[in-house]
Length: 347
Image (cartoon, rainbow, N blue to C red):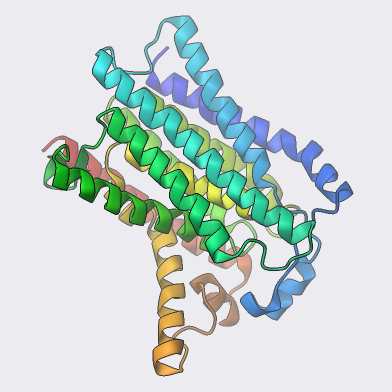
């Protein structure tokens, strides 16, 4: 047993479990009438044909990823292979970053589930209000950051500069303020990316692979396992979500993915690596901010429709082309992120 085998097991289990779950979950969602309600004011008019497509499909990869990670860690334990550092202090920090990160992602999924439930069952089109989403999100983020602080996991790698120690009072203040901004922005940026069939899952596949590679480079097997499980779960989900989608992940899935991507960035102690690795998420979120700002200040649109994937739809690109191009962009960003991390840890 080694890191490569452990990561491979996590990848395969997550892919298979997620794909197989679709055969059982999608009919249940149909039976429960958990169909997507398409809002014409936030998407192209031809998205009306997606009306009724089951949502909350993110449950598939949530189960697949968590189960696969547990299986891989148990196999490591049984075979005597240490997935965490042999040094007690480092081991406790790595375990905290891994398990607290998964718990954070799961808590975000619960917020997303509440939003989806209100939309499809209570028939309230907008689901939770912004304040109803933001308050629990901020509380979840605060709890996660507090767990890192208590385990003395506040250090942060900055590409080309090495690792910063943030154990002073000003450093801790920065750690919390920076963390709230980054995590809140990231989970909602991933949520913006879930707008057309196959997009969010596809661009997240190279993200999972990138974190797996970075975990291996840093000799942190647990990160390699979770990154591989993320990639495998997304591939298993795409089997059902590729155009034309048979299921949508809903906020349940997108918020979980956002939380897990952030958790992986903090697990390698380099949240700023999300800029290149999560380049598609960043562009999607910024396009929405730019559009809203331009309309309020200039009374003009910058894009035909935001987020930016809708702009390309309105420009004549079909959904498959958008997914392909955006996934290639995500892959390039992930390669850049891996190279930056390699150079940083070997500085």
